[in-house]
Image (cartoon, rainbow, N blue to C red):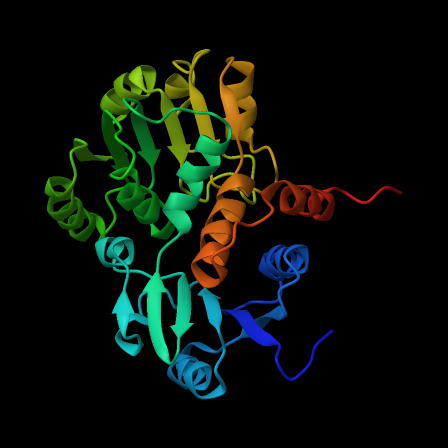
Length: 292
C-alpha cells in the first residue's frame, strides 16, 4: 500500500515508458516488503536539470538514467563512485539525505551475470565488439575482474580518436592489458576472436535486423569452450548468438546484463540483494511471444 512513508524511485529517460526497470524494482521491493515504488519518467533532454532539482526537493530516494542523460547529469551531482569516474558516465543516482551520488552499474552488471552462472573470469581473454555507451561501460568494468587481457574493436568513425585517448588513459589504471583496434582490421579480429575465452557484442547490430557484428570468416573461428555474450536481449537470441551456439559456444543474451545492472542499483539504494531468479522469470514471461 502506498502511504505517507512510501519512498519513490524511478527512471529518467527519453523515451522511458518501454522500460522494464519498473517491473524489476517493484517486484524486488515487494519481495523485501520495502515501502517503495518505482516509476518511469519521460524527461525531455532540456529538462534534466529541473528533474534532478525535483529529485532533491521532493526527496526522491534514487533513480536510474538512460540515454541521453548518462554524461550530461554529472555536473548536477555531488559525487561519483570510482567506477562512474572511470567511465565518466552515470546510470544510477542515490539520494543520501540530499547528497546525490552517481554510480555506473551497466558493465559490472554483465560480469556479475556471468559470475552468477559460475563463469570464472580470472585469467580469461576477452574481445569486446563496440565502444559506444554499453561498450565503454563494459571496458571500464573489465579492469576489476583479473582478466588476462581485453581487446576492443571500434569502427573508425569521428569518435575513434577520443575513444583511443580514453582507452590509453584507462589502461594504466588496472593490471589487465587493454588495447583498442580498428573494427576494419579483420585479420587482427580474426586472430583475437579465435584466441578469446569470452566474446562480447556491445554493438546494436542484430537488434532490429538479422545482421551480424563480425564478418563471416571471423564467425568461422568460434569454437566450443568459448563464451559469447550479446548485450541485446530483444530478440532473446540474435543471429550472432544463434551462429555462436551452432559453433558449440556457450551463449548468453543481454537479459543477464539488464538484471545485473538493476541488481547492483537496487543494492546501492537499499543494501539488499535483488531476488534475481524471480526477476528473471518475470522478465522472460514479459518477453515471451503471446500465444494466438
